Image (cartoon, rainbow, N blue to C red):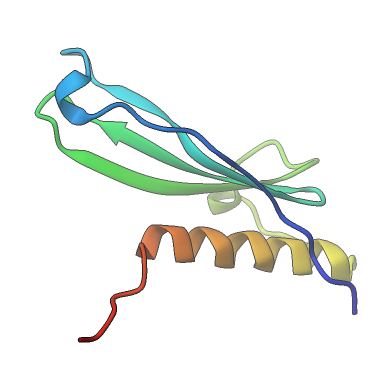
Length: 100
């Protein structure tokens, strides 16, 4: 079994109060493992509400994974996909809650 090494890039989003009237959207986290890339896209809307969503892509597929059935016999590509998906899920869940 081969370990999956992740490359993580982070970017700050503007504070909602600093967003122009038209809103803002951009990647706040990008994670790469082999041929798999995932991003968390933050959208700040004109009413100042904020939404985050995850996007995952595999090199060679022209569409997001939501629109694609992944068929591969490449075990490492599946490990990379699992690692990216797990990382993004943890990011979306936020920091762990500490019990007092």
